[in-house]
Image 1 (cartoon, helix red, strand yellow):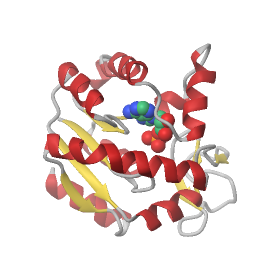
Image 2: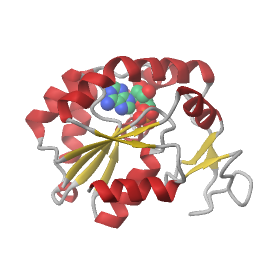
Image 3: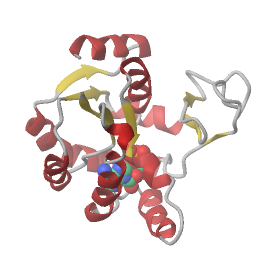
Image 4: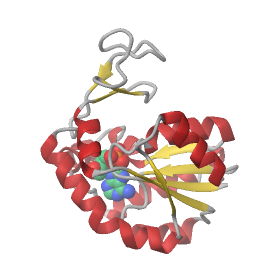
Length: 200
Ligand code: AMP
C-alpha cells in the first residue's frame, strides 16, 4: 500500500507517518529529511531554499524522490511525507507510481505556528518533541536514542509563515486530485493514529 500524508507544518504528519510506518511495515520517506541530508556540491544550494522557507525546484526534488523510492525497500509500500507539494509534482508522481490513499491532517494556523516555534527534534532518529507540551525527559537529549536534540534552522516565525502560505496556496488542488480524507490533527497523538488506522 502506498500512502501520502498531508498537512501543514506542525500538523504531526511526520510523527504519524513514523508510527503508522512501524505498525503497518511501510517505509516512511520524508522529502524534507532527504533534502536536509543532502551532501556535497548540492548542499549549499538546497540549504539556501530550506532556510528561507522556499521550496526547492521541482526537477531536483522529483529526481531525488524517484531515485529514493526505486530502492528495493520501498517495494512493499511506503508513506510519503512532504511530497507532492504542487501539481507538477503530482503529475510527476503519477508517472512514477500508484498511490492508494491520501490522508490530510488538519490544524489551525495558530496551532501550527505555536507547535513549530516550540519544536525540537532528534537529528539521529527523527523523534520530535515540543519544549512546552511534550518535552524530552533530559533537556536537549532524545528519549529514544540519547542523541542531542536540535532546533531546525527553518523553524523560525518568518520562515513558518512563508511555508504555511505556500502550503495553503498549493494544497487544495492536490487534495482534490487525490480525493484526500481529512482528519482532525488537534487531538491526542493516539487518537489521531486511531483515526488514520480506521481509514486504512
Ligand atoms: P519539511 O520537512 O517537509 O517541512 O520540508 C522542509 C523544506 O524542505 C521545505 O520548506 C522545502 O524547502 C523543502 N522541501 C521538502 N519537500 C519538498 C518538496 N516536495 N518540494 C520542494 N521542496 C521541498
